[in-house]
Amino acid sequence: MELDKVIALRRSCRMFKTNKIKKKEIDYLLNSARLAPSAANRQPWHFVVLESERLKIADIMEKQLERQNNKVVDRSYATKNYNPTASVRESIRIIKEAPILLLIFRENDSSWVEGDYLSIGCAGENICLAATNIGLGSLWIRDVSYTKYDIAKYLGLDDMDLVTGIAIGFPKEENYQAKKKDLNEIVTYLK
Image (cartoon, rainbow, N blue to C red; front, side):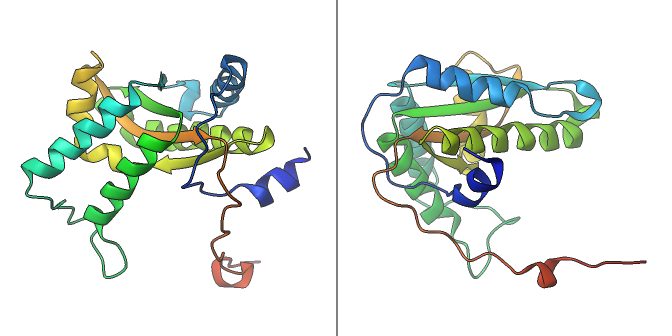
């Protein structure tokens, strides 16, 4: 598919079919991520592909909600338009439904946090675009960050920093395209 078309068709998929994804398709996504740019070419990512084990990740997230009396406290993101508790509940549902949960970790290195996060964002976007290119849906999931230590410990990666997750599968229905801002709202040209 042409790059312009892939970019235009990429959506955040929140409803997945149960169809199994072939290993060669997963490898295609991971190879696309591996080729992403990274600060100082550090390639700070480590990918964990979860099929049935994704249900344990959803369980860890649910238990954390229970421990916090079904309320996520996130002062950095709680706004009038964002309810972190509802977001975590929806992410749990999606993780249970999508056939693949791909987690992206980084080595704990305090001198490279910002550069590594930006690099991992590039790798994540490559995954989402590659998924669109082969007819898969994807959803970037920030909400794993609320339980990142428990998830890392469960996976035996407590020496690493869980940055994000991406749910992957075949879309159940055509995904809604969120309204995007016009260029004149987000660009300033200076001469």
